[in-house]
Image (cartoon, rainbow, N blue to C red):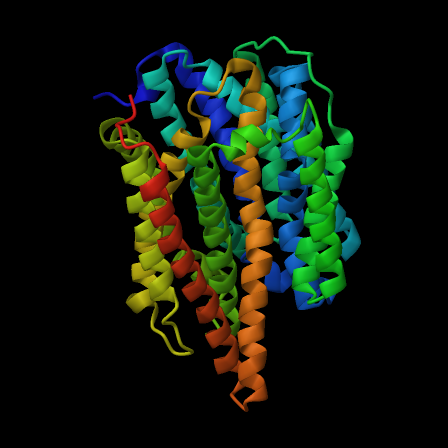
Length: 458
């Protein structure tokens, strides 16, 4: 069967514009992964400050996505798409010229604000391209793999960029993506705004502030800050439950299929970012590899690009439930392999095997979960639904990364107190984080097995 994006030429170009934008917005998360050690040396920052720099984009992205979805529904997806990409591109340029840590940190955070405005609008516009439910499900399956494609592309490209140029080009490249997206916006379908809901700025601020305090508190091992973040997020959820017009529709996430699907997206995004973050540090700081070699090591992850059309066909034939379970179990196997690394692990062993298996599993898991999460959503709620999917996708690389780094750090410090060598203790900490992720994937596969609809997707 011909791939969906070649069936009708009138949808090919708009989908290409929207798909490239999605890949670019997600790639911005991981574009700074490989040059992180170089950034740390230039600004003389601590490991926790480095982790915050890596997470800042996702914190703003994830925290404000629901507001972005509401704005897309209320003010129009086309307007928010252009506005978001303009903010994203401008802040990327500022980040590239930053002269100090706080400036580049602010640029990363503002990039995330722009992305939070553009991403939900992009999903709404993409769904408008496919009024037919069957074709839309195939498009959603491919869309799900675009996110992990972006993350992988960003990781590989970051090493190549820093090999031939400064790390600052990891900001200039997203600026170029913003220019291309703005130029292609005229080819996108028009969606009339539904000005029936309040904007929810207060709720969006609560969500973003809570995520920021919680994640940074975990990274800094500051219980008071973690507690403050948890209280703020709890207040946000209480407001949503009591509101007649909530920013986060509790009923949408209370649906067991959608709720579990969002957890799959969250976990897969967390695993993707955390594994590349830790492996980048492991290969460069533990095994002494160069940025170029490290970037090349991640090349097998590009297999995820092929998972777009494959996942679409499998979703249509077997349904979201089966491919999500399979994808989650493959991802679990990949993380289990990485949990076996030691200081001298050869790349051609468990590392290479894991990097081959993970993109296949992640592609299937993202595709199936995206179809399940966005299935049956009314036109006027697609901006919010898209915001939910992207929120899960962005909170994974922030909160998930913070939690797994804390686990790795605790394991490392425990071994150091026992008299172990620092290098071995650090490696064991990384392995512990991977093992915990593998277990989480097994649990989520079981949850999908018993909550997703058993019938085939149409």
